[in-house]
Structures are given as structure tokens and as C-alpha cells.
Length: 157
Image 1 (tube, rainbow, N blue to C red):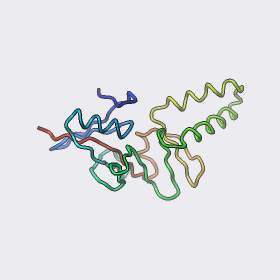
Image 2 (cartoon, helix red, strand yellow):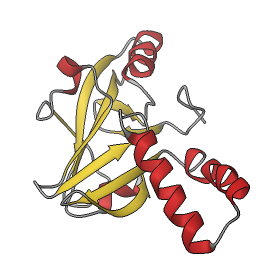
Image 3 (tube, rainbow, N blue to C red):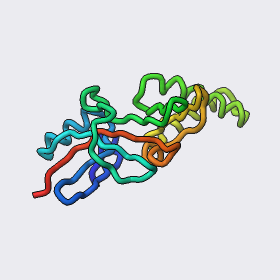
Image 4 (cartoon, rainbow, N blue to C red):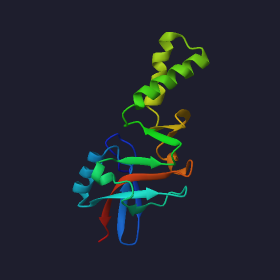
């Protein structure tokens, strides 16, 4: 099983003429994979709530040197664990969670461990307010989201 720089599973999709690899933890991670496999960087989209990627350039990931973007309409914002500001939202969520559970102040710091170690966490905001926390993989199936990821395409020989 191949893994990315964060030791998470790389997804493999086989097509008639190529193999597509997704699930990279950074743009650099994808670049390194492309070099090692003699492949090309491509952008793929997951649309209509399914796990069937297709090559596109709609989000401009290669030009922007991004590895992951979700577009789900004006009212939704998806904040990936690698995005600026994620830490601020995560800290606030942990404070709210600790308050609801009635944790002692010293236990609140331990609670941060949960969100930091969740599988590639995504915070979902609707109209600027917290809606949910999900994983990168599950984001493909939420809110009619269009998920764009950097990928590596390797021709089949």
C-alpha cells in the first residue's frame, strides 16, 4: 500500500490507458510522486457524490500549486487541515466541545489531540457558521460538493 507524506493511503484508479493516483498531503508530495513514477501532474474532479475521478483544470490546482479544493456553492466553505486558519477553527471547536462535556481546563488541552489526529480533517462552514467536521474522503459525498485534487497520471505500458 502506497502512502503520502503524512503516511495516509494513496488512492489508485485504473483506466484503460492510465493509472491515476490521488490523496496527496501536499502539492510537493504529488510532484515527488510524479517524478518517481515518471508521471504527470493532473487535476482531477469528483462530482455528483461519487468516487469516479475525471481529469479537468476547473479549479486551477496546478497553477495555484494546491493539492485539494472543495466547491459547494457560495454558502459553504470547506477548510482543510492544511489551510491557513484551520488551527483557529479547530481550537474553537475543541473549546466548545470541552465546555459542552464539562471538561476540566487541563483536559481541554488533551482534547485537541482528537481533531489533530483525525483522518485528514475538514471543517465545513455554512454561511460562516460551523456545520460539521468530516474527512477529506467523505467530503466527496457531501452537499453536492465538487472536490478537486492534485493527482499523478501514469500511462499504462
